[in-house]
Image (cartoon, rainbow over all chains, first blue to last red; front, side, top):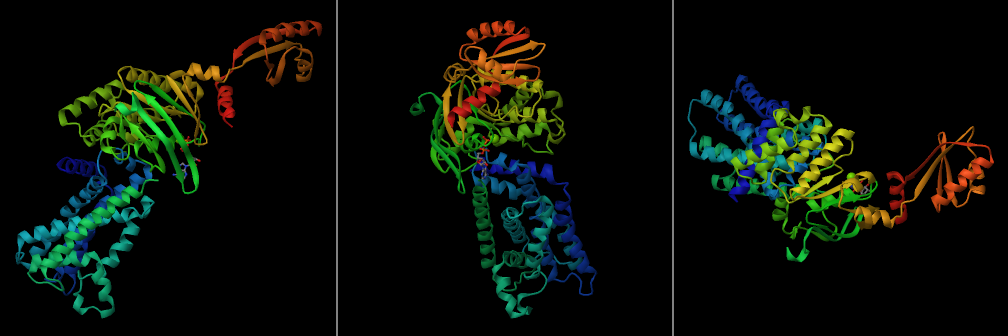
Amino acid sequence: MIEEFARSFYIALKDLREYYMKPGSISWGILFPFVFALAFMAKRGGLTEWLAPGMIALALFFGSTSMSAMSIVFERRMGSFERLLLFPVTYVCIALGKSLSSFLLGVISVVPVFLLSLAVLRVPPAHPLLLVVAAVLAAFASSTFGVLLSFLVKEPEQVMVVFNLVRFPMMFLSDIIIPVSSMPHYLIPVVLVQPLTYLTETVRYAYTGTYDILPPTLSFTISLILGIAFLLLASDTIRRSKP
Amino acid sequence: MTECGGCAVSVEGLTKIYDGTLAVDHISFCVRRGEIFGFLGPNGAGKTTTVRMLVGLTRITSGSARICGYDVVRDYKRARALFGVVPDVSNLYFELTCYQNLLFSAKMYGVPGSIARRRVEDVLKFFGLWEIRNRKFKALSKGLKRRLAIAAALVHDPKVLFLDEPTSGLDVMSRRMLWSKLRELNKSGVTIFLTTHNVYEAFHISSRIAVINKGRITAIGSPGELSRKFSVQEVIEAGFHPRNPSEEEILGNVKGVLEVRVRGDHLEIIASDPTVALEDLARYARLRGLSISMLRLRGADAEELFLKIIGEAE
Ligand SMILES: Nc1ncnc2c1ncn2[C@@H]1O[C@H](COP(=O)(O)OP(=O)(O)O)[C@@H](O)[C@H]1O
Ligand SMILES: [Mg+2]
């Protein structure tokens, strides 16, 4: 178990070493969430107490779905992904390894956005420890979701296009920018079936002590279940990727 | 282990069907410990598919395989720790150096830190790659890439090494160097399973050969046994001055000739008994006032042998 986790970690370190400089990781994983948050700050409404946790969740989501996408699609194209399938490890170990590098990038990309929020709001998070847990859960579920999504993309050049075609609608159809209660009611079912809503709810509660639709026990539990479910689905996708 | 009775690799009714196409058709064989086992067949015969099933990269449609007694599906973790794989394309990580690539493999096989570093150094030195250990994989030539791929398959000290067409696309020097390295490895106790479409290579390096064609094994045995089985015919090469007789002239007048082919400035003659045909050929040339400008007797070349081995299967 610990042995397997160590090997997932080696995969992540290898990916970080290979892909940290790739444009997709930095532009969409780190710069975009920060610039997006800055843009809100410059607008009339500013980076409100509603938007700040949303931007943190956004940074975690984009940061944690960029690197694995690059590494998996590129390696599948070049044939080197199969090297991982030759090692005496489980599919879960491989899926976890591939999500872990993204997870780490997500944790890095949330720092500037978090500092920006602190500076603008001038109030500390309501539950700092819980915010760490929320960030870990959000980065975990996002990164495993990213691994799963990577298997739908064939060509390395299309990675960011496909990912953004999925990520942008997810962002707008969640409670990152506007509360669910003020959305047109026909959109609400869509908002409720997509994972980003729940990840945002955990961050929002930990940061502000309030929530939009779900009490924290539920949003944290659902986020954890989502993360584990995506990990298992990703493992199975890797297994089924064999001819 | 006892079950396979000394088989490093044992295969039972192994079959692969890719949505509708039968690529490997119920093959069974045993690779004995310490052998260099050549898996010989033309393109599309099913060599790669077989290796991929054995090492777990392609799902098995039916049948089973064991490596050192461990089922490659049910006991995959234990089996994988005992074999190394060199795929048909050298697929190491582009942005990592030679050293980093090998250390990563060692760690993924669970080789502990200090042993891993020593082992990586040994393997790099064995393949003459130590000096370029800090060069990135993407910057290597094809031959060096292949060598590094083999080195990467050896970092965990496997008992069995699978190589899929390891010398295809390499120049003569790299090919010879690889052969000698494989022999050296074999002497140190590694069982080698190698696929090739090159008969010369198979006969040159293997202690036993299995011939595969269209997904079926059509012959299996040592190079000597296979040569006898396919009774390699000798070919007479002859050139005449001032002109070569036509094919019909030879066929009609020289004893025991089965087939005549024009080859550039000379003829190739296949006869049921070459000694008789040679004597009669000299007689016929004198009769026609022709002098013999060249005369040679040679065994069938690798290509002819190959066609024969494959052809006999059909
Ligand atoms: N992934 C695949 N999907 C469908 N057919 C395949 C696939 N891989 C190989 N084949 C087919 O299986 C047969 C055997 O191929 P292969 O094992 O690659 O032969 P070899 O390595 O001996 O050249 C060929 O007819 C090939 O077209
Ligand atoms: Mg092949």
